[in-house]
Every structure is written in C-alpha cells, then in structure tokens.
Image (cartoon, rainbow, N blue to C red):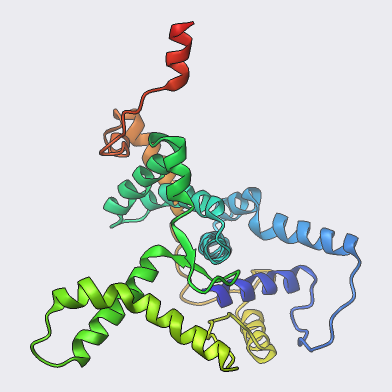
Length: 292
C-alpha cells in the first residue's frame, strides 16, 4: 500500500509537470524552493483538494474520483503507520478520530465503529488526566530502544507468546504449560538481554533486520509507464477506457452522513460510544471552590 501510494503521488506530480513520458534517472532535477512550493500547490489543487473531488463527482468522472478517494484513504493508513513507527501517539489519535467516522461508511465494521470511538473517549475524556497520559504513552514501545522502531504493545506480547509456544513445542510431551507461564516466560526477556550483552562484550555486532519500504527506479518507471498507458491521472482528453467501473464509495462522507442521520433519529448508535465503565473521580477544583 505504501509503495502504491507513493508511486501514485509521483504520477500526479509528473502529470502536473506534463512530463509523464519522461524516464526517471539517478540524476536529480534542480528546482528552486519557489518552484517546489508552486508544484505542491498545483498537485494539491488538481488532485487532493475538496474542490477537485467535488468537481470530479459533478462531472461523473469515475476514474478520477476513484483515484482521489484512493489517495485519501491510503494517506490515512500511511500517516498512521509513520506515526506509530516514530512513537507519536498524538498523530495516531488523530488518525483514529478519522477512522472512527470512516468506519461507519464501510459495511461490516459495526463493532469496530463502536469500540474505536469508545476507546478514544476513554483516552481523551472519561479517565482522569494523569491516567489518560499514562495509557496513551504506554501504547507504543520500542523493543530495542532505537528511534523509528516503535511497535504496539500487543505486538510485544505476541512475541512473548511465540517464545512460550516455542519452548512448549520443543520440550517434549509431559511439559506443564503452567510451569512455562510462571517461570520460563517471565525470564525470556532477561535471557535475551544476557545474550545480547554477551555478544556485545565479545565484539560481535548486533544486526537488526528492519523492513523498510524501498522502490527502485525500475519499479517506478514501470509504474509510470502503466499510468501513462491507462491515463491514470485522467489528463488526456478524449481518452476512453472499456469496462469503466462505477465510482467507489466515499467512506468518509458516507460516515459523516450516517452519524448525522443517526443523530436526527435520536442518536441510538452514538449513545453506544459512551464508555461502558467511567471512573467517577472527584473534582478537586470543584471542592476548593465549595470551601471558598
């Protein structure tokens, strides 16, 4: 998804510059800061702005509409992934707020559309401020302490669960799983740290395998040729494509409409967003004002 998203934005840039037929090389093009700002503004106005999307819908240009919606939806996933990798929980919460609305525009996400807003209310409104901050900043952890390698805490728990299953499968029959849970699983992180420290003291270099999204010039040029052949950005006039599909659903707009309709009917669905358990903590400021 990340590669497709980046390549699609690149094709939009090439179409805006009217250089779609150009083959990319290792040599970088020289551009002034002013030219870069103008290019970014043009790409945004032509493909990513609200006015451009509304115009494409009015013209019933389904291909261009689908392209804009794809970039819009993919951008939320890429943005959330970048925020999680850097450990920026604030940006993650912003994407969760957006997904809370988009979930109501997608069929089959009824429980997700209720649990996600409920969790957001717990982390931002219902719980005391100190507990909110503690929970928010403990959702993401970096296992090795390296920047840009944060993961969700449940991912760390899955790793520990894997090692527990590994020891259980390799110790033969008759192994008591409770003994593994109570003794071995707790000491697995300690054993791993001892092994890393021993390797470091012996002079061995720690090699970490991290998945990074990289695209070669061959892949980019192949995508650009496909985009030029099928008029991906819809810049060629009079170009027609057989078996044209209908416009996809704008899940963000549909989600807003669904919530507005539910509010007009009494807010039955919205009432389910309320946290199931809310801590009833006293307001210290209110007590002080009462004493005064």
